[in-house]
Length: 352
Image (cartoon, rainbow, N blue to C red):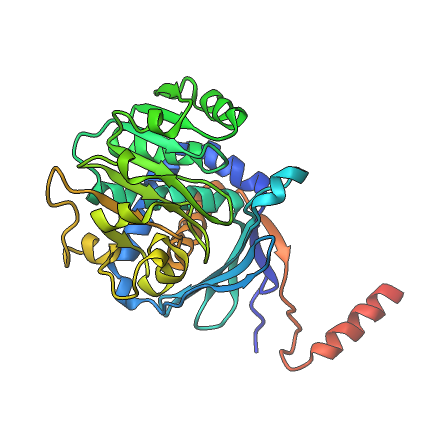
């Protein structure tokens, strides 16, 4: 049997590689292109082997595995959510992921996904908003100005034309950080002193808070007719951001109903409360926004197909940008049946 060269090597995209890739492509183009991959995969939703993420919850946070496959490729992401981490200088969310060939089971790509998760979350939010947000909306309220906020702002600018931002966070330093990072990028930015102030005049409200608890970030009186709510902070059991009355007034759209019933805003509602999965709107099987006065809610918890799309996008870009390292990850003996002999030959070569 003729050996195939470099079967041991898997391309690895480090944090530095990912940053360089985003800079080389440009953040807004990266988000827009990635959104195209997400939307394309949602259009073939029924081809995917889907499952809710496997989660290990603790008092401090959650660690999750998120798998998805279309029968040709398989992807999974390891991700955590630990809101207290910022107190010790750590990220609330960290992640890495892998893309593999189903036919052989061999990994094709290993990548950091802390940055990539922020990008795919923003891209997915913007995809949903194209179908659900009021036409012509140019102002968005960003409630929660942490690590996700700038990505959301840029995705909504690139894909929906948002040019005015109203920012609020319980930590004024987070708002100042967000405003500073987005300065000069085409936004009129208004830091606000309350949520009530932030939502004034906004056609889209994005909530992206981190506390692992049931919280009431938005109350019913803050949400007027015609608003689109992009709720991305509630993503585990016991963690919500919206008052229940808002849900009862809204048409609710989700990624994968079985997962969102456990983790999303709709965990506050009966199990039979009607929702619409986003793929059905994208494919035309169900309506999205149907009227100017309609309140739409994208109850987003993040789903594994979005990570699949993100890894697929990065893999394709590496052919052009070559921003990766060659990782010696897989054992590749001359005879696939002689794994122990490979160890012995290594010992002999080391001794020599």
